[in-house]
Length: 211
Image (cartoon, rainbow, N blue to C red; front, side, top):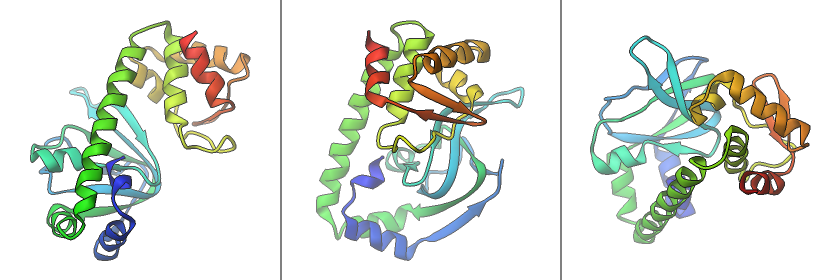
């Protein structure tokens, strides 16, 4: 995430001068169309980003956890937000106002270059993910998605994601996602639990996706 590319001193100042906000399970944190007057950093809990559809259902496009940030791109582009964000369980987030961020960034010019580099990497990674997700069957695509989600997550920790959210991220039905998960579990690559999923071998999962 872009926030992680900032210098530690800049992040410390932003955190010292911004406020934490608490959200309950299912509470809407931001809505599509909101003004981009800042961005969020997740301190505790899980946030699901996506879009509410016309009939009222919610379609997930990302599941975020502690240390993740979002909303920076809307802030930089000064365009209305394009996603809704909902708290999964109790969560605590830090809101960084745009004015505060730009004021502090001016005193840390090296972070501006780091942000550009992080943004370029993010765009390149997104292109690779989109290309890879268009190849192979649902099981291979799910393996790739989980391998990417597990980057930086210790093997003993679980990914806080449901089968429904995985299906939405892949653009398949829930039964299809469930069958793909079963295949990966039988191959010894993942372990399933209620509302959680543990990746047992990220490297093997990535190889499975590309074989």
